[in-house]
Length: 148
Image 1 (cartoon, rainbow, N blue to C red):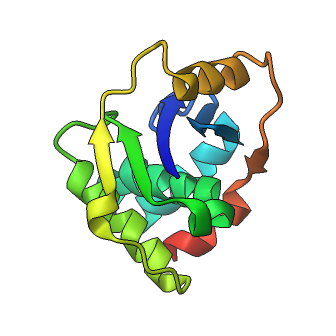
Image 2: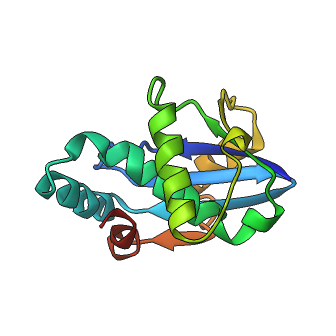
Image 3: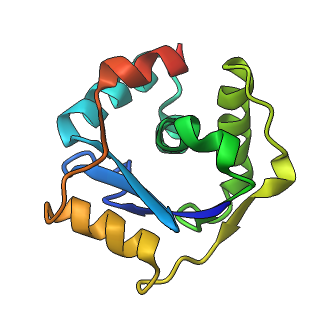
């Protein structure tokens, strides 16, 4: 299965919640509240690495979104949210997978333009606007072990 991932409410916008969703036959979403993101951001600042907060957190959220379905996923297409930093997000995502015993072909992770009419975008936006509940809700406590 090939999936497309989109985001509503960018990770670095810590005054608003963030939702990532994937779609392609199946749909799934993950939600993190603004306050939880601020707690994660604080850890990055304390570690002297505030510049990678958005990229690493985004990669961790992708992993948490897809980890239970990876055995069925052949390709991951991620919306171009952070142009010029795709390589970093891909690296963080692959490192996270590897740390948890998952081998995934790096060539199967690509960055694409996921348009506003795509089901992944519609799902992410619908959850962001609270029209649908998220499938997964994460807190800073669930994110922090992936950082440290």
